[in-house]
Length: 469
Ligand code: SF4
Image (cartoon, protein in one colour):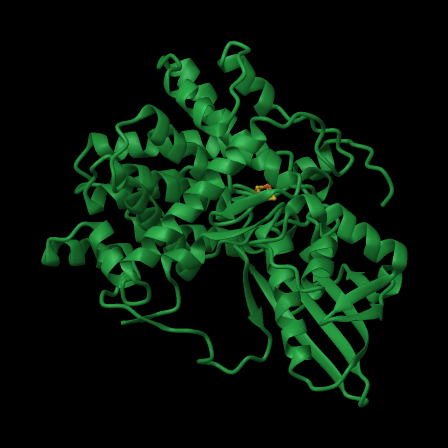
């Protein structure tokens, strides 16, 4: 069974604040310079055009920064994020870009153009143009599809990688039937599929690496105070909340801090505040261009760590739970990507926080011993109560409502999991595949002002004075 999506395509390690507006354009720029390196002639000049949503909220989402880093070959997985301001400051003061080992003149005022007009290909589109020393003009347009996925315009069909999976898990219904006929859990089915691509050691390493990036992100977010960049004046809250929950005590490292949280009171209010704290920590890091795991997007990257840490620190955490959590939740993200969208520019925030909440609900239900039907029902419930959620970031920044929205998405995921586990899921009125189709229909009818353009909702009704760029 050929498939274009592995669970590990959904989870990507990247840099905030946005997967569609930062990571996608960054990866597109890397792809373009790779093409230039194969062109066999020196690059004389370079230009970039950002269209539609990438233009309208590009400054707030760091699209310009991402493009400048990608064109200079920096890898979003490994770049030390603390170096980013210095790299960008150099480009801006010297008006040069270091592309494939050579310095190029590059003045953002006319070489990086924000075109507010929509591109017919996709709401998130960017075009690179390069003039080579031998006179050739190389031009390539990319669509940023959300979740860090990109598509080269005009790419021949069939050039995408197809994974040779054993099981066809392309819908919820197929997964239920497969689980029943093979008597395998959802994790087992997905694991055997991933084994067609990766060794068991590689799968283990990938899962562990995702978890470590999430843990580090939460830890950094819970130990960094101050005001987020962008001019909105949003104060970071995770650090003070963590301090308050630990009665003002400090711990010298991540390990002792996590151990202290494990010893926290288990009453509802305390656990609830910790879950919010984890989500705030990740999204504050994301807003500050920190390293996060795109799950399925950067704007929604706090939901899954918050729910996973809830289970890791307050639940009965088992040896295989990381694998079970990431495989089952990642598959839900893949089904939404294939059957609807994970791009806010296409479907609003239901496609980001809604999908991440559904993913987290599925992962939690799986590690709590739910059946395949219950896992899917948990995902369905979580999405059902995000349907129609708009994307209206104030000032085009991934801060308000985004940061708190992740805490809400995490709590909805936990409630959805509890509801699914409380029944046997055989009589669920709404099926998982039906909620995917409903989300997609809602996305198609949502007005463009609610799709990551900052032209509607909170973005226009909340008056803020942002500094001039
Ligand atoms: S409102 Fe939602 S979809 Fe829009 S930027 Fe914020 S988190 Fe992303």
